[in-house]
Length: 122
Image (tube, rainbow, N blue to C red; front, side):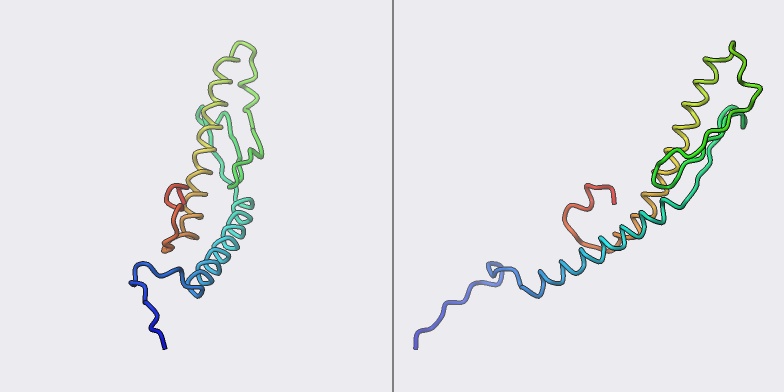
């Protein structure tokens, strides 16, 4: 009977159990991410600019839902100021939504040692 050569531990192929475990873990993460994204779509954040003259409501999945403009701002001579305040309110709302998404998605992927997730900001 011929003896089989054994590969050194570092040269062995991937374990099918390890690969199955990783696939199961990835599927679990994918399902949790989908649930988290659905929950984010239900969240509402509100940002204001101009001392409350402009209010923007955005969803957690970064969709602008509503813009409210104080009627006193609709003076045609105030157009430039109104545009600047709208930009400020939109940017503040988007930043809040990004922070919320990063916090919630970070909770889904925390503790996982999966290559590539670090570069995704998750």
